[in-house]
Length: 274
View (spheres, rainbow, N blue to C red):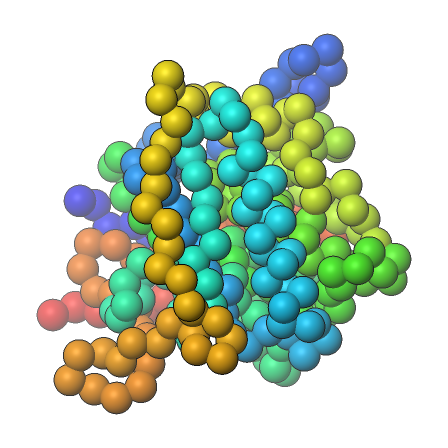
């Protein structure tokens, strides 16, 4: 397996969505292989340190609704599931507990290390040879922007933001159709991205076409709540342990939902060698 590297992605735009013309695009490796999940059952976690401006239960509800938007597409074989609340906050393949698709909050001063005009960002870890995605994490820029779950016209809609970013987690890139959920821009109070649009549905179904039998997934283990988050200690240690996993996989592509301009941001994490 070839080491995945973080890179500055080129956006492959196609014709605008008029009269059913394709406007959706996908995330590709540097060698032109489309990224995708082989495991079609994807658990998504919410990190416990929800932004101070949000009610934790409402934030979890926003994630549930965003997950349901993608899972409710009948022609798509991929299934997203809410796994619960986790204490882990590492982006990329963590040394422990390994791959975990997590929504993370960046509230503290200096915690948002990406472009200021980006309100949320998804990082994918994938195999550069096959394009298989093995981990995806969503960072919310709550340091620079206020989010709401109740449609407040002065704040960014968390549910719509998460719906957009989950599209990136599935391997979707930005659409050239301004009515699509995967359109790159967002505005305060905008609620249109809460539901998928025709271009989004065509794109995700082309990437993960449903077969004759629906995808069957084991239900996530219940009980991981804000009062009792998923937080197993590293064997032989006490408390949560993070750190990027060494070996063949490193953090890869970053995709951003910006409110004025599209920004695809690259980052580099130190590699560990044994």
